[in-house]
Image 1 (cartoon, rainbow, N blue to C red):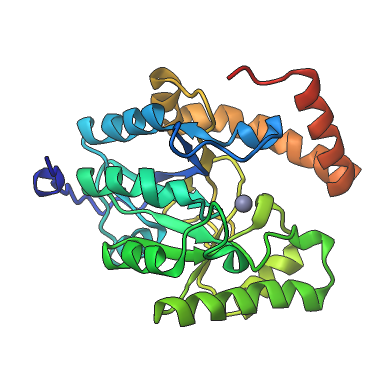
Image 2 (cartoon, helix red, strand yellow):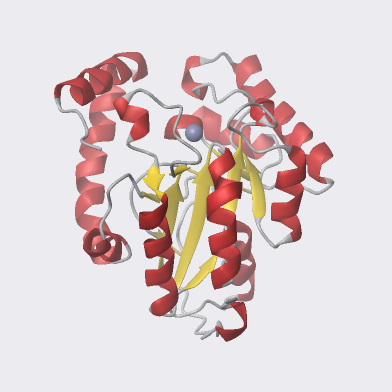
Length: 282
Ligand SMILES: [Zn+2]
């Protein structure tokens, strides 16, 4: 059954609305076992049944689920559904096409998929035909860099190569403009944000935890709520509440301050150690 026809829009035009952007990575089933061995990355892989349930929750509660591109269209027209959620996927894993895409079509949702340009068609990743099919079905494709390198670790030339070459490859591949970028690993500096603007992008998604107030949010540091493995319905519904997210964004701010103080490499090392000490139970 296709639910698309039954979706209705309730347009309010409330520019003080806080919009939640959700972030997913891979979706996992037995036909597509995760190649990710490290606990830290495995945590980003959401089980298919959970993902389906999350989307069903959104549909049943009347949410209008849109891509980042559609979000900016709504912002331009000052017309938002009272219940709007923006859906994004990072990394371009094949499960986004095999598993998530059919669910999105079923519920009439759109989403933005941030793709690592050099991984197009590589094992476990979507190829250009699959990306084109996503676009033909109303999905947006954005850049997630050329190689997924963490940009603060690169020199200026390499940062620009990541930003500009990935944009060119995706534009050539899809014959359309690419306007969105997502910082690999969520890592950025002020000068990288400027480079993203200079490279011709119109917006960029971060991994800063929080919601986006339509009238005041920074288009180049869009905040997102990452949905990780094992998120049950209660937690998922909480993730849609701006008040609930506000509490956790304060904790996230402290985490980022710590990262800034110790540096990205030391932070990454400590994070891995921490995951090893407290392994995630599958
Ligand atoms: Zn990524």
